[in-house]
Length: 176
Image (tube, rainbow, N blue to C red; front, side, top):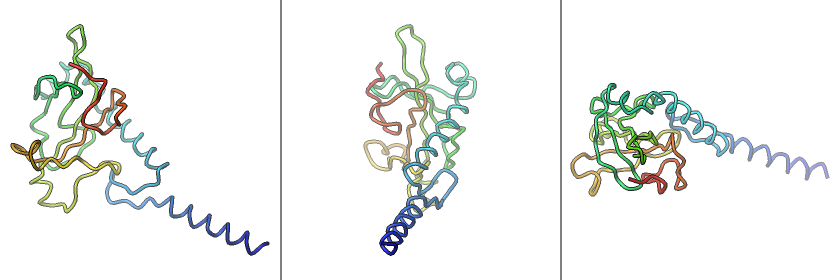
C-alpha cells in the first residue's frame, strides 16, 4: 500500500515539475505552462494598455507621429503607422501600428495594436520567427502580404474583444 502511494505521489510530483517549467528565451518569449501563460498574457496586455491608453484620442496618436496607413478594412479597421518604429526591435510600449474602428458619429475607437518587424533586419540576427509571450508573429515574407515589405506581424486586440482570438488578424465584430 505505501509502495503504491509513493509511486503515485512520485509521478504526481514529476508531472507538476514538468508542467511548471518556466525556462525563458527572452523577456516576453517563454515556454510556460497554460496557467503561467495566461498570467503572462495578462501582464503583456496590461503593459500594452498602459502604453497606449493616451491613443484613444486619435489626435494624440497623430501628435506622437502616427499617420494613416490604410483606409478601413472590413474586420480589420483603420491602421495608423509610425514609420520611425519600423525596425527589428519589439517594444510592447511602442507598437508600430494602432488600429481604430470608425464609429457611426465619425469618431475613431482604438481597438488594437500591431507590431511589425522588417524581416530582413530580424532575420539578419535571429534564426526564428519573433514571439511575444509565446505567441509567434505571422510570417509575412511572401505574397500576398510581403510583396512590397516582407515582415513579421502580430496584432493584439488590446482594446476590443475578438471572438476569433486576441492575436488573430481579423475581428468579426469590427466594421467599417
